[in-house]
Amino acid sequence: VHCSILQASTGRFRHFLIDQPSVIHVKSGWKRILSKGTDVSAGPGDAIFLPQGLECTVINAAEENGAYHSDAYIFSPALISLYAEAAAHPTSEAIRIEPDAGFLDALERSRLAIADESATTIGIHRHILGELVVRLQALGINLTPDPRENLCLRIRGLVREEPGREWP
Image 1 (cartoon, rainbow, N blue to C red):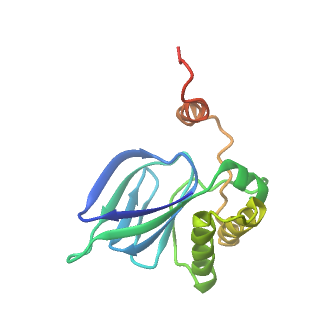
Image 2 (tube, helix red, strand yellow):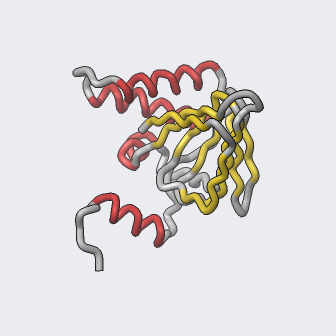
């Protein structure tokens, strides 16, 4: 999933729970992630990796005479299972990324693949998005979830899978 985030003023979001691993690429303004273990900031051109299960405070700060703008890339469990190294230790905290030209190109190809509604096969789109998983692993970032059970994530996952179901 790709979404573009645009805010005209600074926003602070407390007790934010990351449902799926994500990369946020900051275009203007800056982003700050505060959790029990880290304090990570990123400015224009930088990116932040957010692991699944992270509970944090998110601050999106607008530039003095502008706005906050970023692109978010959210990785599905199916994509992660295809490309991530299952044996690697999961990344559990936010990490700042200084993307090189290859990483930025991969982000752009991913954005375009997600937006493409043509007859291009799903396999090609999956391959394009899988490059981001491989590039993150090359930076030492593993997208596989922590194998320890997290009740909150489990409940959210169940509801997401069957939103119309009657829950006791």
